[in-house]
Length: 110
Length: 112
Image (cartoon, rainbow over all chains, first blue to last red; front, top):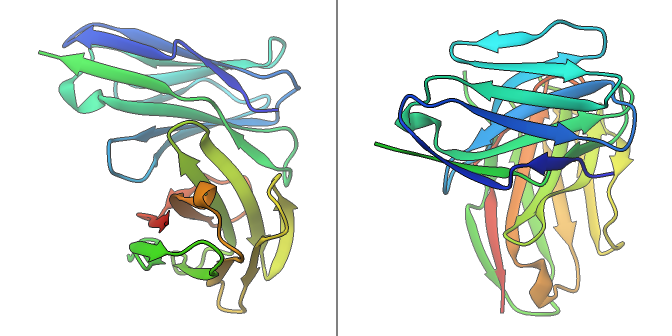
């Protein structure tokens, strides 16, 4: 039941955009997004709930397509500080077990 | 406010020993989850506690156990350590289940 993320890795130049996808084989209640920098703990970015709206956070936003059981994270005009591994996390129902995705390594170069 | 505190930060144990890891959540947070992170397996869910009750358990052997106290602090215990248990163990807390999680810095366990 672990969600699958794509791509596994991506390298961007500063200012470029990226999309990270998270797909589940089960219907989802919520999707979380986290970023983990090397040697640090994951940091919560945002949560999307079933029936909810697309979320935004500065130049990082996400959408949740319930019918396709997937979520996408959009990073626009990337900055060096965006580098890290991005994880989605999914919950089938409130109170159910939470699964993290396989992770996407994102590297932003000057 | 203080973040999630995990102790110890680093630990080296010998195969067959047991270990106890501690996690103090953010004040007011009642949900505490534990994860094992390894390069090959990513973030694997161990268990979740809410108000001293285990609500969910991941697919780990019975050697892995945990508990939560009335002040929401949580401990995780691993008995009969194996080399494959070497990993970063992360604790995360949230106000309620399903909220965004705040992670601690983790405990790096090395089994030799």
